[in-house]
Amino acid sequence: MTATRRTLIAGNWKMNGKSADGVALATSVGGKMKSAAGASFDMLVCPPFTLISKVGEAIKGSGVMLGGQDCHTNVSGAHTGDISAEMLKDMGCGAVIVGHSERRTDHKETDELVAAKASAAHAAGLIAVICIGETEAERDAGKTLDVNGSQVAGSVPAGSNAKNTVIAYEPVWAIGTGRTPTNDEVQEVHAFIRGELAKKVGANEAAAMRILYGGSMKPGNAKELIALADVDGGLIGGASLNADDFWAIGEASN
Ligand code: PGA
Image 1 (cartoon, rainbow, N blue to C red):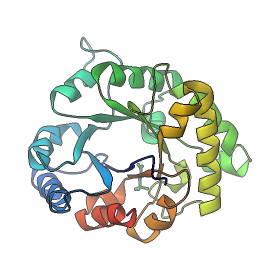
Image 2: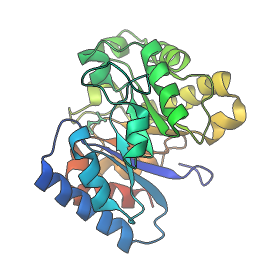
Image 3: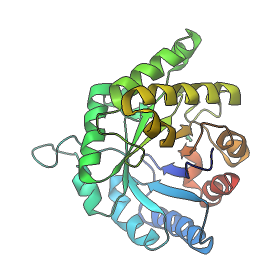
């Protein structure tokens, strides 16, 4: 965390939420943001596509940003079941997550595809939240920096800058497991990522670009993680499904 990069607390609801609980969660988060007028952090919620519209209504005017969890590389066309970045923008989204490890695994998404999705997000005027991170086997094999370096090189498209792009470092083995790397390990990877970003986007943009940590971030560990020099917020899964926990993570960054 540094004064020059504004902290971002992003919630990834994944495939969770039906109308009633999704709206209740969004209303609660929006209400907290509104009553905290002037919060020192940005907040983003990424519900499943089915709830984008209702959640958008629920957080309207609160200052909480709306985001999608994925987008197609094309603007429109014959792609059954897909959603374009333009469609998300049209529904009031300001951001979209691309390249989450669950999509890389479930849908065999490659760095090349992730970069194309991020480009589509940029073209639509959305912030691309580009996810990277090593598996447990890669960490055990001492390949953590290599893997994250090659994912930055392959997944961050030309045209990325500190305004239209956020990086989320999510060690795959920390997602939903309750396990996290040590603070020193997190800082080491974040600083390394920033160095690799500098090669892609230039030193100034890399210095201004937000790099979130994700993977079992909770109210209990958020403060120490977000306090690390190159950690600029969190991408939160499980704990973002509880408004009090999600908000507490935001407050921990104050
Ligand atoms: P988690 O998920 O907070 O439940 O570990 C994070 C993510 O996958 O974005």
